[in-house]
Image (cartoon, rainbow, N blue to C red; front, side, top):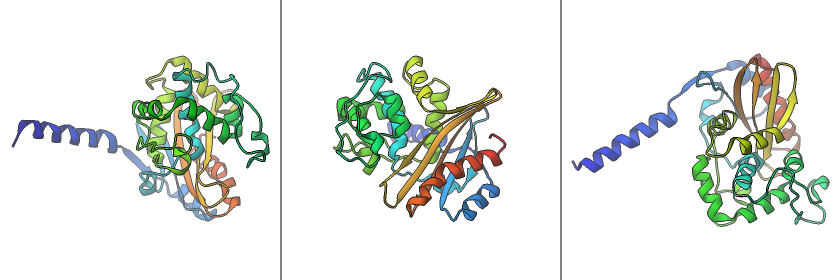
Length: 264
């Protein structure tokens, strides 16, 4: 057999095991939370220090879904890295509908405000300014999901082809929390600051929601991380949204799972 072919196969095997082998602990108590809420989904907690996953529904955790507005974290990083915006407070113009899906979206704003409101039109403008070529390059550098952007620069994270698993989300966020993404520490620090949800004496909670195909049936997300007593844990939840009220269960189930694990 050709030595080049053998070498390629060895490299492929090593990459496979590096990517897909990990410790996983299934938590039936979290399964009960989802079952009681009548929700189909998955929850992943990544213990960064111990390189271990704890959660519910490992099979779904390995399945890729469209990231929807959770991509705003990566979009912010890329926009800052490209100099598309100088900082998270530089104002971008609103170019969406006159009567947007969420009324508060309907004006110019910076990324700090836009990510809190999950303002789709503002982030679509950011993506258009970045462009398909650079977006494609950055998704590869960030090793984000399947790295596919297709041909529509302002819709690929809403309609596809971009997809990512809950496991991949948690690993991507772990790199962000450790400042090990191929970006300056200042850029990573800026983006982390704008997704801070709660800060206590010994605890910090960061997160971002997403809802593919909102306001209709689709997949809902809540991803983020928690820093407690000097330790960092990233998490990713996704669920099937079959009716609008299911969207409220993203954060509800996520927080309940974190509490069950003794982190909230």
